[in-house]
Length: 168
Image 1 (cartoon, rainbow, N blue to C red):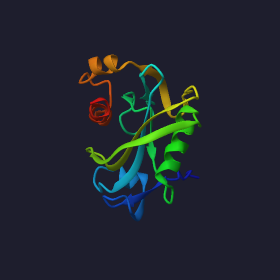
Image 2 (tube, rainbow, N blue to C red):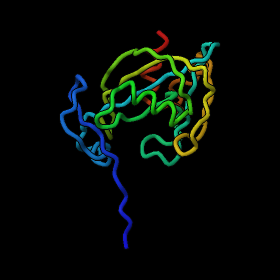
Image 3 (cartoon, helix red, strand yellow):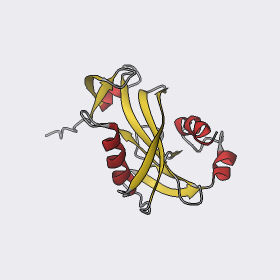
Image 4 (cartoon, helix red, strand yellow):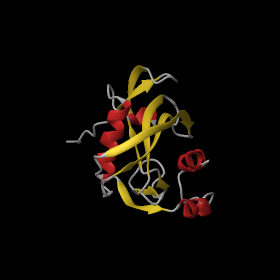
């Protein structure tokens, strides 16, 4: 008997973030449909002004092994943006107590997908503890260390674009 693997469903949204339909992850990430689906990004800073980055698991379907935003994840159908931000922060880094502000909302397009990104920055009193099912490793980086590493193909392209707006 063949085991069925369930496919996660994403809301498909218009450019304002209004849900217009739903589609499975496999379709949203197939490089053909380019269905716009919403995600959250959270940039976690510590008291020294350092930014926590996660190294994506080698099992990820997109950009495995690349360093990326502190937290990143898809918004579930019917879920509010802030709910997704809190859920993803807890799932990926084990942090529950977060303070955050929206930086910007923008559309990111790669060869495989189109995302409506809600990008946040903030802090937490909790100490990050990476979820090994999601993240290979994580640590705080100085902004200088990040700047010195830009363009060297260790970060995701989306993080590099977002970082320039984060610190300018």
